[in-house]
Length: 353
Image (cartoon, rainbow, N blue to C red; front, side, top):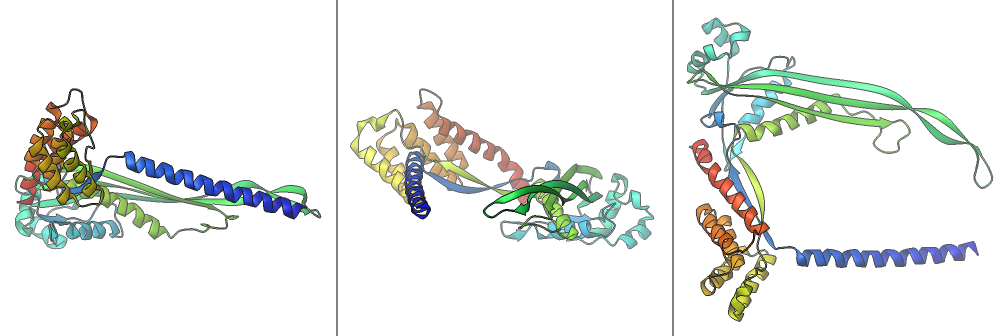
């Protein structure tokens, strides 16, 4: 009897799961159908630290507090490995610390001060010097928790439960990098910035999975990688990917012109099939047939933006905005995005020279 009941329950559960999966699938399809089609485009942005615009030949000193040299070496390798448009962005200048100290008669603390930066740069051909301090930290703690267990097993179920102590452990690693960039030509600070990161790992002795300590070096490497990732956007141009939405319709209804409607719809179909250049042919054709549609002009603007013509994209977005009777969210986002990218363009051009 019990077996029959169990079978019925299992069949009911399977049936309910099938219905749930069908419902979720339909919901997903409806959401996808309602969402505006979009295209991803990648834009090169200038380094966030404007003081690094002219930095190309970089010398990196050993960091104070980095006693085993791990972070200093990682920083040098990281900077040397930065690429922009497929080519190395920086030239890493080797700093022979002993020679510099002898020739300039400098103490360790003065080595990268603004006062001596020009002289050091002349000796090394570096245009920018990076130095600072590194403070790593590692800790491991132990605690206990109470766990219930079956102390006396009965014929069918546990007759008596007891509690026992189980050891739990936590490892934590953190670090802070205080970095200073000095412009050699002017002998002035290009920028100073602090970068911090931390990671934790915890487990208890009764765990079936994920138990056991992580290597201390692995945790420290994770922290260092996080810090270098933060540094990357500050010192060199970096890529940002935007997901740009196309408009599906607007209040103009395309002037009730069937030719415009079918042409615009064809463009959207090509977008959905990830054939944006072909879609743009239809959007531009639709623009030649109807000059009162915000959606058409916005989508032509998207085409110009994905082709890298930001000024034409802005003009189309502005025209689309002027044709609306109330603020449109998609048009507003496009205007803000392309205006921001245009304002960043001159800084980027300076860094790429």
